[in-house]
Each structure stands twice: as structure tokens, then as C-alpha cells.
Image (cartoon, rainbow, N blue to C red; front, side):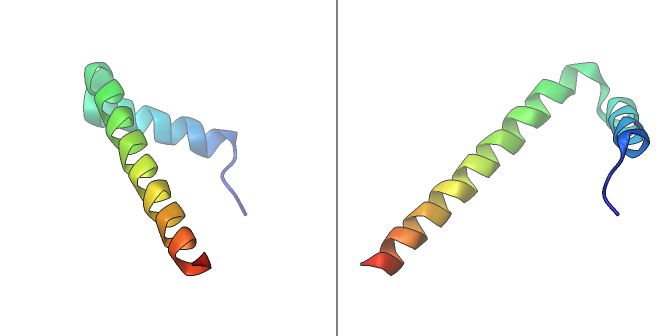
Length: 51
């Protein structure tokens, strides 16, 4: 029960309607930076546990 192609297309259309084409790159950049910060924190935690 995952996301299929129709659901993904519907989500993309909804995001385009809500944020507009110009805001999408800014939104994706912010999400990427947040994901990187999360992964960096996870790596630091794993390193602290190993010590």
C-alpha cells in the first residue's frame, strides 16, 4: 500500500497550485537542508554511541 504514480502526480499538482512555480526551488532547497541537518545529527549520535 504505497504511493503509486497517480497519487504522486496528484501531490505534484497540489504543490504547484499551492506554492506556484517560483516557490518550488526554495521549498526543495529548504527541505534538502533540513534533511542534511537531520542526517548530520544522526551521524554524530551514532559516533557518540560507538565511543
